[in-house]
Length: 397
Image 1 (spheres, one colour):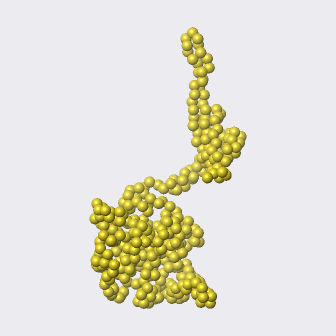
Image 2 (cartoon, one colour):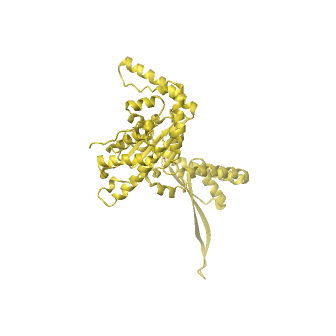
Image 3 (cartoon, helix red, strand yellow):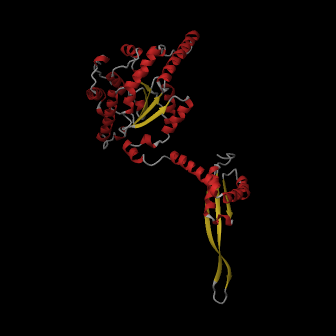
């Protein structure tokens, strides 16, 4: 299909009315592709951040975590016209309409039908407003085609905003370091005749241009990204840390998978229920407090429970270490005190085990009055203790 595009005005003369820009581009898309073919990705992960914050470094990592096969869409690579290069070399940004037109056409490619990672978008308030309009238009398309055979092509969109942040000093240092690494790499490629040359950005060699690029991000892009916090799933990542720590933070942010698949309104309804990780963290602190309390307030009882665990339970657990499960039955009167049962469970939890205690109350016949037929019984308590742990992987398929 041919793509009709209108001439884009120079950046300094560009119309800043987001609605007008969006409507003009959308009309072009309808004319070029047809409404039934405006099939944008279900999931968009928009990766923004300060220059040198590691967007390029972490893009492929995010794709791996999310299982996204399509290559990332790097906005700076889309803007490859001579005019765009001149603006970028001075630390500025290309006009919004050109950015949006190129991006929307790219997003309609079949390889991005399920998911896409955008590196460096949105960067301005106009782009933010057009992103909101794109989301709304995708929702409208979903409704329009909901009762047609094409409904499966128009799924509920999910937009994800991820911001990597470093301060000005770190950003400038990383930009200049990247420039030196690029020069060394390109020199080696030219010398050996093997490999691909990397882009040499003017801002990576001049501290003032690097500083200007960072301040452009702070003054125009950062606030634009933050404004999306109330609408889409938003993740702020402190990228000052080493790469491995940053990636752990990214994994933690993306770990709650359903937030990526749910309609944002549904997610907003559920978000008040705490995540499992949050509960575990709180439970761990409460466990510590309880154990310390036992030591101070019930020291003798705690020592008795620990002795029972060491002498009666651990030999059985060690015998069944391969299976990862051990069960011990006991009538130990120590556990008539319910606090002792709670202590036992907490002790195992602190040591990395999972313990369950079932109390069976039995009536045991002792004698029968042959004259009256009355049966005399005694009450018996049996504590069934089951301990779970990570067993050996030997002979496991």
